[in-house]
Image 1: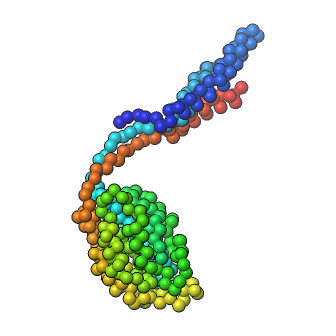
Image 2: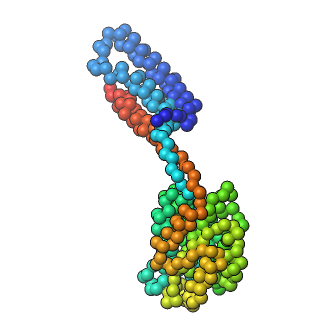
Image 3: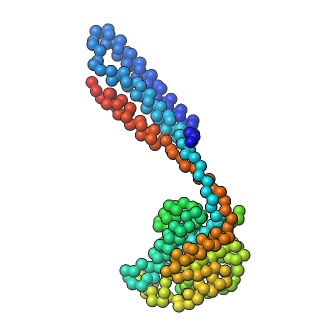
Length: 319
């Protein structure tokens, strides 16, 4: 356990109290001389004598807080797979489809599945991206589960952002090629994994070509398909004519075969997570990760100023 200061020069703020303190002490001595010259009795109690030490304590605490002391609680070394996972959520309007007006829609179910997947991969860096006719990253792979959940809840939603071009079928699975051609994954190596949560209702594309692109980029995919042919979009007049694509299950299976991945229905989230974990453990080496625990003392030191400051203010208001 070691103590260090993040901003040691900021402790000079304590010098700002020196001049007021000197003025206060000079005033106290002048008061004593006047009282002695007039023959006045000394005030009852010794609280007045404690004001100067209280001001010194305030200055010391503020200076220490400004220096931002931090206690290093030690180092925890963990072994973690050298792998990265991107969870990609379909955010096209077809993901608003549900079995009834009060039933959870596809996107709500997909978001819940993403939470469960994250919980089942606690030691693996996991990122988030949205997907329509383009893939946009919202969070690059991290082991921070709280950041993952906050991004999933606050930053992701249907039409957030909307597709780049409005067309009858907004989703284009061909857009997944950007995962291979752009810098979504760290360049230093390690295994790469994609988990796509979608209804697989896409504009025409060539599964063999997309599968080849993913394989050449060493991206191991797992596909989770949401929805069925009975679901509809409720509440929006513009979506009243929507009808599910009956070919969606076949599209998911064809893409899985072409890319060397696996496809699951939405009720098999646990099996999908197990498939991702198995791929991570078999395809990734391990690396040592040092995690340091720290305790920041500045808030507590700043809080400690309250007691001597309250004493000085109370003494100032007493006759």
